[in-house]
Every structure is written in structure tokens, then in C-alpha cells.
Length: 354
Image (cartoon, rainbow, N blue to C red; front, side, top):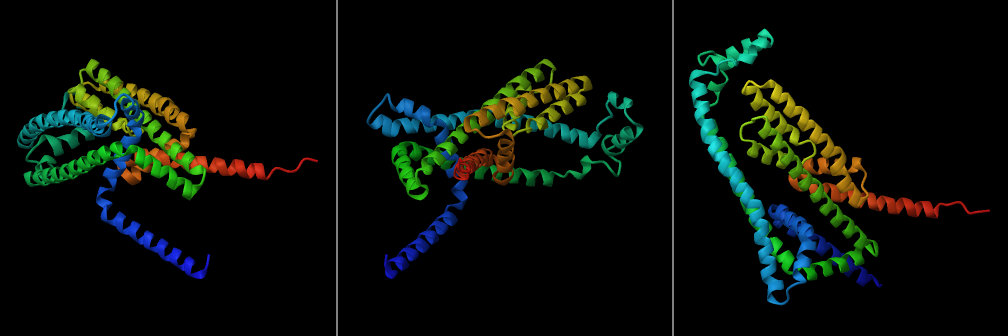
């Protein structure tokens, strides 16, 4: 290649890099929606191919992607709307109870007599007497409640927009699935060579295994703990079970809901039931997070438990819920590349036989 050709290639690469950077800057607000759409498309791709094999023409091209997108929307929105309705009903009751407690104070419960004297004294000074200088509830003003409500509303609106763009992107990913996959395979082959397809398959397997390990195991934890909450008479067991299932998608996250349920039992004067909830919850958590989840995720990707845990927690810390899938996929590809490198180095470094 002559000098002019080299300079033209460099200029083209610089232009491409600038255009990619500009495009990422333009769509940066929609990157979470695009990433979620890709994750959902990867997860449901086997089902989509199975359904598409039964129809041809316009049904397979447009109507089937639209129907699947609608089904995904319903799967997300129906439980969410139910939870929001329950939360609004609870918020009304909580607001009335809070107003009454701010006016009259909260009397020390009977079980507080068995605790240390300073605990009862603290309760009396900060919760029982509404006229005491240290009364905690008097510091919570209605203005603060309104401001927090506006922040929550703004956050919900932003997430609704992201969800709408996720559904729109999902539809086009399903509709143009073959063209996108074909272009991706050709591009990966040009950039990474024969290993490109293996890298893509490893990332896809990791995403699917992570969905199975996080979502399905989380639903199982929520179902088991819903039964425990119901048997022990915990208020609103179904709502707590749903929240436990959502929290359980993050390793060890369900422990926060165990603490909430235990606190409700203590407030009802049942510390024994609170202890049962905590102990049974920790047992379920240990089995799910140390046995079931690593077996599902690590078994499909040959990823050791430590890297599964680091990928999930590190991804969640950096990217939120989206990182629960990005983290393990990144670790799975990295470990695969390391094994390829180590095996190749080992084969190339063998001593010659005498």
C-alpha cells in the first residue's frame, strides 16, 4: 500500500472514530434502553425462532414481533401496576398514621420493658412525647414529603420513557433479527477472526444464564418467603413477597426485605416470629445464592463462582440493574479469552521430548 493509501486509511479511521464518539454522545440518554432491548431480545430469541418457524410472510415479519413486544410490556406492567396500586393504598394509610403519630406520639410497646433502660428512655424522648425537644416526627415537614413526591414522580417519568424506547427498540430488533445477526457475525469475523463468533456466543450464553439465575431464582425466593410471611401473619405478605422476589435478583439483596418483615413483626409484638423470618430467610438466601444461582450461571458459561459473584455485584455497582447482566457477560468473555490464551501459551511452551 502506497503512502497516499495509508494516509487515506488513517483519515477514514479517524473520521469513523469521531462519528462513533459523536453518535454515542447523542444517544447517551437512550443507551440503557438500547442495552435492555438487546438483553431481552437475547433472552427470548429461542422462543421467537420457535414461533417464527410456524408462520411465514407478514405474520412472521411484523405481527409476531409486535405480539411478543406487547407480551413483554404486559409481563412488566401488570405486576408493576398492581404494586403501584397497593403502594398508593398503603401510602394513604401510612400518611394518616404518620399524622396521628406526629400529633399524639407513639407509646412504647410492651416488649420494650424487657430491653435495656436506655432504649426505653430514648423511645420516650424521641418518639413517645410529641412536645419533647428531640421528638423525631416533628422534624419531618409536609414540604419535605411534597418535594420527595415530586422527585419520585420525575424519576418514574424518566423510567417510563426509557421503558417505551426499550419496547420500540425490541420490536425492531426482532423484526430485523436475521439482518442484524448476519451483519454482527461478518463484522466480528473481520475484527476478531474465527474467535469472534465464539466471543459472541459466550456473551449470549452468559446473558441467558444470568437471566435464569437471577430472575427465576429470585421468583423462587419470593414464593418461598411469601409462604413464610403468610404463615407467620406478617402484614401484606403478597406485597412483601413480590418485593422480596425483586430484591432477590441482586445477590444477598433479599436480606433487606427480611429485615423489613422482621421489623413489622417486632412492631406487632412478635419478636419470635421476627427471628423465624430472619433465620428461614437466611437459609433460603444461602441455598439460592451459594448453590442454585452459581450452578445455573457458572454451569452454562464455565465461570467460577467467585467471578460470577464479582461480575454481578461489580456490574450492579457501576451500572445498576443493567449491570446484573453486563457484569457476568463481561467476566464470562474475559475468562474464556484467558483460557484460550493460557491453553495456547501452554501448548506453545511445552518442552520438546527427548
